[in-house]
Image 1: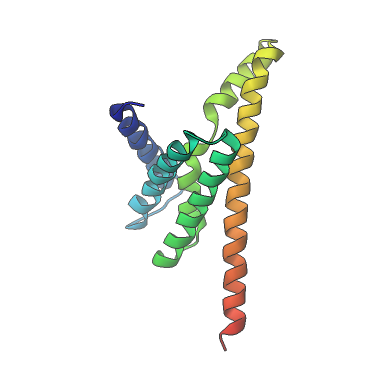
Image 2: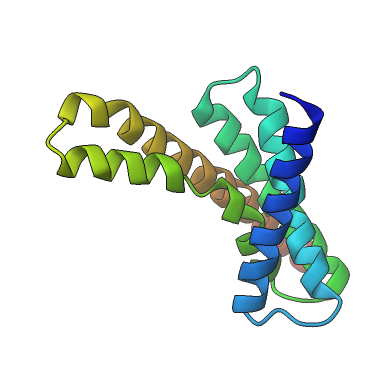
Length: 149
């Protein structure tokens, strides 16, 4: 991938996450941090996606987004959802979902199958990645609270 294409993808990931952050009413200093999460998450996905299958790359990117959101939540004393949701926006498999639905509605089941497979793999990978990291953080928080008198 050319450097120009990479920078373009990272910039559009930032702008897309920024737009959703505004839509979700994220304000102040949290706004650019939430948008930066989308840029970093997409960059991470591009990095790991070069060598790994789409399901594994999506799972790792979901883990990355959740870890970023949890870290920023603690730094800004805000809910992690404020940072996780915009971070995963670039990972949403919109293009493959569109192509899948277009081919299904056109009656081309054979042509739809690869797009459906990709859509399910990306969505499943991101969801599992977020669930694993969020659950682990909740468990660690619970254990920490039980230890602290």
